[in-house]
Image (cartoon, rainbow, N blue to C red):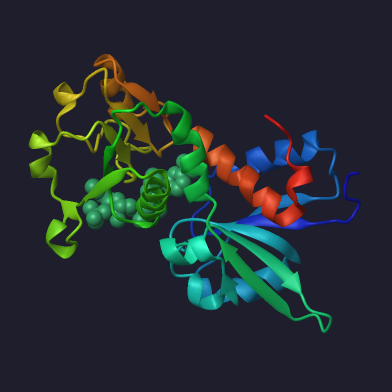
Length: 258
Ligand code: NAP
């Protein structure tokens, strides 16, 4: 049975004009016939404003994006186990006590979304990975790889700051066959940039996953495809993390099968 209660959801971040989330949720809400629900883009100058934003917009839940996935955590009442391990939150459920006070509970749906969309592409030789970048998305990727028993190293511009990372100059000797771009390099409008400096190293046995979904494919994935690698862009993950967020807000029975 469809919910007849009105629910307001939204995306909280700093600069949201290029977000794909509203279009996706508007279509999803329309497909499910939940016309009393709505999803809005909610720009917020600093993360400490999250309670005011939740009250003002009567939110039942929201997604969190750049640059607040980590900095919002101190302003939440609780976070679930995996979000705590990852150190980043991209989904929040808003609960209201009898006296009307809010309780904000944080989750990370990026990590299971990456896991779910990577898993069908894996081959037995994808036992070790390189994760380009060390930010919130890279940490979600690392969490998923740990669940899958895949070893990984981060690739950073400042590898001296992390013992589990290497620098870009060391990539020419790398043997990992799974490469994940979790940097913004190659994202619109900088579409002529690639984070991977050695495209000629890529082979049929490589699996190249780019978390970027605009453009799709990125230069990194186009070069990987030229070398017959398997490629995956960030759109499937974007949709999956949104579906998982909606399940958290509404309950699993409200998610369409697609
Ligand atoms: P972020 O924190 O801004 O950046 C991630 C990391 O990338 C940084 O920590 C940095 O690592 C590296 N980096 C940043 N600028 C760089 C540059 N100019 N050159 C080389 N490395 C650079 O971003 P994020 O939130 O983790 O997101 C990363 C990307 O994933 C974004 O494009 C985002 O849109 C995408 N994403 C997609 C999904 C999806 O559902 N498809 C979900 C989440 C994120 P070092 O300083 O260590 O080099």
